[in-house]
Image (tube, rainbow, N blue to C red; front, side, top):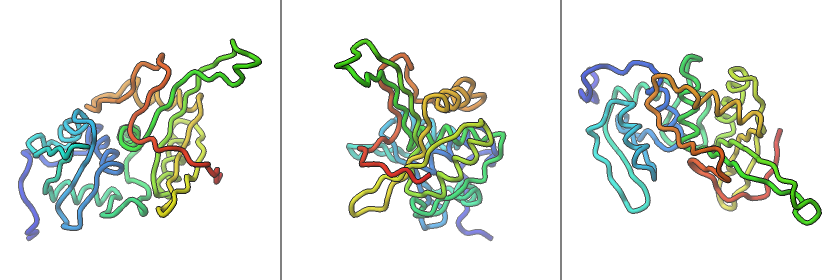
Length: 233
């Protein structure tokens, strides 16, 4: 008998678009605690907290606000074991690898990764204002961030197979901390990726934080100050 178990939902978890999106969120802004039953998720966006809870059928969970972010923390053995089976572990930041998400729901999980620790930059670039004041063009860049290179290697490979796009893996050195890695997609690849993620989200309840791309800049999730990057491939 598993003494950890408690009944928190009427129906058992079933793999679908919403749950796969939640996997992406937990892989970035959430964690499994070492208790064997507790799951935590943090976001500055209250709507994203509600979306996460809806996706995992835990709308009754208590939401706390500490002044800088909203947090949920709850015991859920079924969800905990399900997330572990997919590839999440306690203290995953440096050890996260691939996620066992089937092709059918892979892009839903990617949407969660992007809405968690990803960024979208879209702006008008003027490369030589002095000599060519009228020369302007739009730039678009999608980035995924992680302290685990293995995780971004997996993501880059899966996106290449699914969408035929190529991304660059960049190391961001950080003083007194582990390096941060960024998987970066340029304009064409970003256009293909965003169209696949947000043009038709199917049954997913995810609320994409993608504003009107006609604006000068859009950001979603975590976009740290840039240090001199080191392209590693």
